[in-house]
Length: 109
Ligand SMILES: [Zn+2]
Image (cartoon, rainbow, N blue to C red; front, side, top):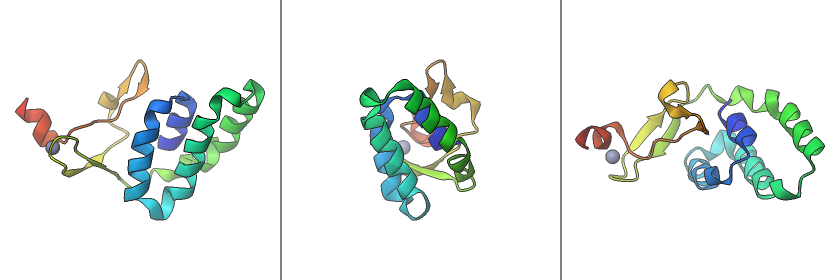
């Protein structure tokens, strides 16, 4: 679900996060993450029908990736924290928003 949302957003700003995530949790999702990164990079060259087809095709395969928590690294203190994609706070009008800092650092502000 998580990867699929990123894919549907078509937003290249997620690539750094995907790369980071790929390094942390490579065992299960590396191939899928790599695939999404490559598609995002080629997005401008993709014809729209092909893009729509890819999204439909991956709707199922990427949907099953949510059983494990996503570990993020805090940009401020470097601590690892769990990114819970089901948290509605992470969704904005632009789509999914990644937290950049852990809860501890957020509370200190
Ligand atoms: Zn922190």
